Amino acid sequence: KAEGAVSLSTFHFYIRKFGGSLWFMVMALWCWLFHLSEVVPDMFFALWQDDVLQWEADDYVWGWLAIGIGSLAVNLMCREMTAFATMRVSRRIQEDMLSRLIHSTTRFFDQTPSGRIMNRFGEDLAMVDWTAS
Image 1 (tube, rainbow, N blue to C red):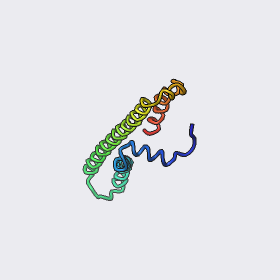
Image 2: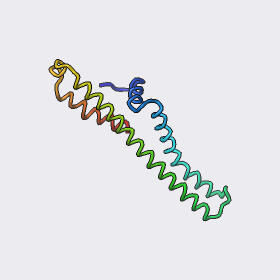
Image 3: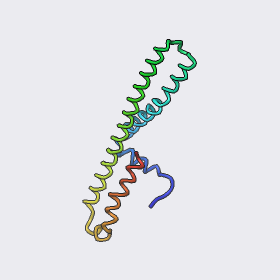
Image 4: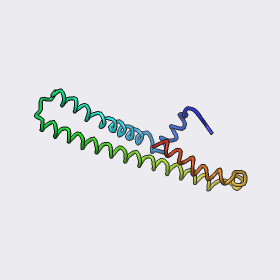
């Protein structure tokens, strides 16, 4: 069992299973938007507190409400995209593992205990899922 830093080849493997660099960059953008959506309401509240925009109180309330709804929408979308992407990667990894296992030689099954094979499909893949999400 490997311990320590994650190798670049592992990152490359995961990005490939993710759908390539483009999809990875799209997901990174959504993650950035997620964090931005958590900061923008606080920034707007600071502007409201110092009356920088010189709006009426009702305008600030409507602005706060609009930003809050927008932030909620972005947060929900980011969480949904993360769950979808993690499930997609997990499914692709499991399909590849199963395909390689099915095409293994009889000698492999004679030498490898069935518990070890089941462990790879169960616990190890669950660890990848939890770590990735």
